Length: 211
Length: 280
Image (cartoon, rainbow over all chains, first blue to last red; front, side):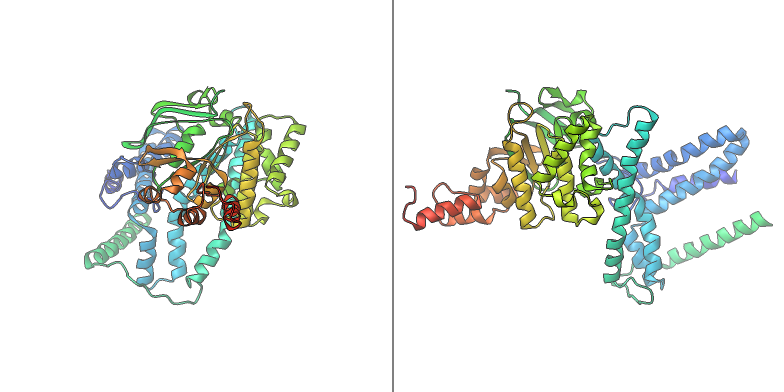
């Protein structure tokens, strides 16, 4: 029952106005005209669905439900966080709260990486198809096609590392440097309270599980 | 003669947002056409329709006598060579010549034919000296040329290029111009040279290479006329969000005969005028 309740809460959060799939800050895709809240909700459901399938193949129904609800909670929570948090604002908030700018950037970049990589993968797939690449045929042919899709993605991403490093350096995102925030996001009392409440709830849940 | 490209009443939407509305146009073999318009006007979507990456909601896109609905992009690649923005990200082979050969090999051309196509493409873009280098050892501008060489090596009847000169300096832009002029002028599939459909915001480059202008405005074909005619109409260019290139500006300011838009043509006319032999 507890698992069901937390999964419902997590899924409900994906329908809140804060969870809107922006252009650069989320793992969720949106096509013009679609309703943002539903897109985040649908992304959470679609991401969780394969887990349910594999759990059902491996376990009996009660275990599948028990683990599946936990997985759904985790997935929906993550999708919600990603949908609600613009990474640049997250960096600002973390720097304003006294975190190292490098740590804040690494955290935000992780959130921002998925949509960037996905867009790039799509561009590469389109370009290779227009160069005559077909994913049809035997296994060897498909593997070659996969090579032509995956390798440019990896190479171009690795190649970008230098440029990113240089960009970070020019912005003083280097170890030991102290940055200040120009316009830190407001951190209201209620938000601080909610944050510490969630940390306490997590600690309590952990303690309860380990007792 | 069959058109290299024909769009008959083509419309396309992303969800409820209409991006192209009832667009009709024809490109003859060897024709060199600029596709202009503001950001979001529908230019890139039109390219996706031509390459078969998207299908029209209404109307038909014909590449030669092929309806793009009936062919996947990898099949259409026999007739349409394309270079997208960020084309340098598609490179992956160990050497530049291997990467340029990827398309012709994927289309199943004979080994000797592939070698010839690669050599011609690299020669056209003056990349022979870098043929054995790893694409990622090349500067970004040359990687862009490498991607263009990949499209040239397909030797298609239609080349569709999305911002081919973005990030290129003047010398490299001139290289691209020469290569594309040569390709458009050369006899190829369909009797004429390759037709060019080039998305660009670089009207100086467009003036040097292209003859005809198609302007998309909020998904509709707002203008289809000679590029020289369009570049002569400063007010219209402004309403379309386009900036007139310096040579066209100079031609108008000096009221040069024939209002040339290409640097070489303008220089010739100026020389004639200076020598007192200007056309009446």
